[in-house]
Structure formats: C-alpha cells, structure tokens
Image (cartoon, rainbow, N blue to C red):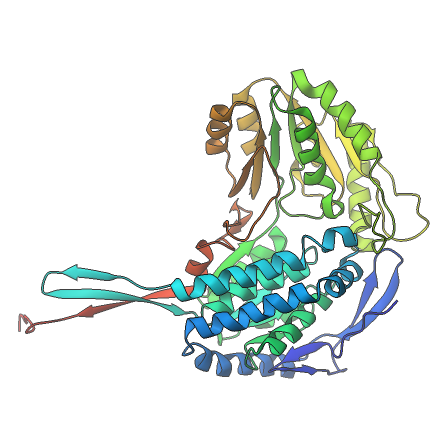
Length: 484
C-alpha cells in the first residue's frame, strides 16, 4: 500500500525534491507500514518558497477579488469531484476511517474555499464624514502568510488557513505536520489545476526547525498555527520578535456539562462523538464530561453499551467506525494516561487497553467514572479515545469547576431548559461553545479559543480581520490650517 507523492515539496507552481533534507517516513497507522518517504526542506528550498510567495503576492493583491474567488471556487469543485480519491488519501495519511474522511475532512476544506470565495468580493472599507473633510479606510492583504498544520486534520487545516489567506490577496507557505504530510501536497496540486498563479500556495515539509525558520523570516507578515500549547508558546514568541500577525488554535481540556433534564440518548451520543470521533484526536473534544448526579447511573450505562458497540478495524473498510491513533508515540502517550488514571483512583467503566487487532496503534474506546478535578485525567490533554466522567450537584458548581483550567477552547451544555443553557454558556470561559450539540464546526462560524487555547479566530467573517489590515486615509478638502 503506497501513497508516494510526486515530490516532497510544492514550490512556485511545481513539485520539487531535494534528497539532502532529512528523511520523513509516512506511516499507515493501521499496519505500521511505510507508505511514503519524503525529505525535509533544506534552507535553500525554504528561501525559494518564501521568495516565490513574496513575488506572487504583490501581483495577486492587484487582482480583482471576484477573479480570485473564481479560482478558489474551481478548486472547491475539484475537491468535490475527487471526493473518493481524497478520502482514501486522508485515511492512509491519518488512520481515520474512510466513512469519516468522506464527510469531515476534505468536504470541510471545500466548504471553506467556497465560503471565502463568496465572501472576498464583499470585503470593503468605510467612509467616515468629518464635515468638510473625510476619512476612508481600505482593507489590504497582509502579504506572505505562513501556515503551520497539525496532524489530526491535515487537509482541513490546510484549506481553513489558505482559503481566507488567498481569497483576501495574500500568499501562503504551508508546513504540514511531518506525521501527516500528504494532503497539503494534494491541495497544492488542486490549486494549480484550478488556475492559482505559481508561488501563491507553497508546501514545504519538515519538523520544528523548518517551522522556526519560516516564522522568523523577515518576509513573513503573518503566522497561523494549529498545534499544542507548548508549540504555540514558542511560535508566538518567535513571531512577536518581528511584530508579525498571529493566530493560534491550540489545545484544550473542554467541559461538556450534562444536566439531569437532558435528553439521555442525545447527551450520550454527543459525549461519544466528543471523545471517540477521530479516535479522540480532536482539539475541541469534550473530554471532561460533567454529569449531574441524578442522571449519572443511566448515563454511564448507556455510554458503556454504546462504546462497546463501536466497530474498530481497517480504516479503508466501510464498516469501520474508529481507527487507530496516528502514530506509535501517540499510542504510548495515551496508554500512559490510562495507566495514570487507574493509579489515581478513577473507576474504569469500559476499555482501558489496546484493541486486540494484532496490528496498528489501536486503543479501545475508554471511559473512566468518578474522576475528580485534581486527577491528571481531568487536567491534561490526552488526545486519544479516553472519556473522563465527573459528577456534580449544582449549576454553580459545574460552572466553577468547568472554568478551573488553563484551557479555554470549547465547551458544551445539554439541558432541556434553554434559559439555563444560555445562562451557563455565557459564564463558561471558552471560545467555541455548543448547546445541545457538540463539535459541529461549519465554516460560517468563527472557531478558536480563549486563555492558553489560542489567539484569534479561524473561519466566518472573523477570519477577515486576521488576514487583512486596515489602512486609514484622511482626505483634506480645504486649505491647511497651519499654526506656523
């Protein structure tokens, strides 16, 4: 089973290879098989990508927004036309079930391209009357943007970052995660076929050193990162040295609060999706499930039954509902957290071991009950299929405990009382929230976190603010009133 791309990098409209770069092996996590071999970008290739982006961006900024939009729309159509091919590639790259990659990954990317294609021609400035004189404003592109992707949604992230950047007149150099590097190359190929001028979307492979080089280059105006909090701190600090614009979508330990009056099946379904979709490797997952005590026993019984029915297996099998973790290091990390939870006294409801599939990096859907706030499982991001169930008595208690974390990415509330739902959501310290739903992230809505979970927002109209800057122009209509 192979997924070897034409070359490791895509620079200035063409695939480029340089075997002098350190090797990168792409592992199919369902079997441990090497499916592609790439190389890190050398300093010369990084410079070449940035130079191409800077050159192309100056010309692209002068193109009518509606003409830029047509290219993005063609790219969205190409993604949809090749849906099955792209879903298979994503499954190989990430280990996700193909039933998931058909609906969640590239389709979300196509939606982003289409959305920002429609939005770009509507972005305008304003006129501010001052009597005789007036001010007008312009929204201008930032210039060369760097996108740094995470391994859990590699193709979606590449689209979410590049769509607003390109639609609004910027260029992008994108570095995918070295763990899942294939989707971004396919996106670059699709952009080129759709008619995007060479140099506007470049892909360079590499680990942290390549990212650091990109972030600190003087030609870069903006950095957009999806990753962990420790990585975010480093990138944010490095970007600040050059006063670069930054958006950060980082980790979380998000609360999902379920009140006694919630619809049980809906709440259980949401909790399962918020912990086991993508084998739990979703930054906004509701991994602290607070269940009011009156519903606790019924909730745990249904969670156990439905979790044990989840079908694990080959990601390319249509029947598979949950695949492996993305890599062996991630498997070891998740199993370590499971062992810590057992030692610290959490009660194992189901799972808690590697899945008996004789291959790949599979972990059983795991649920712990009687988790307390001070336990490691309630404080640290696991990024695997491990649900922590905590119980509570009162609304005020649930809010206080939900907010007692350094993270602030997401939160959810399930209740039949919509007045209470809005009241609770208004007090939760999180940037992306749901009421009687969870982890639905259409491109129309802004997505991002508070506290250490991030800075800025992706998607929606909010993204315009993060890929443009305002120029204010004062127009004098009369003689200058000089004091000298």
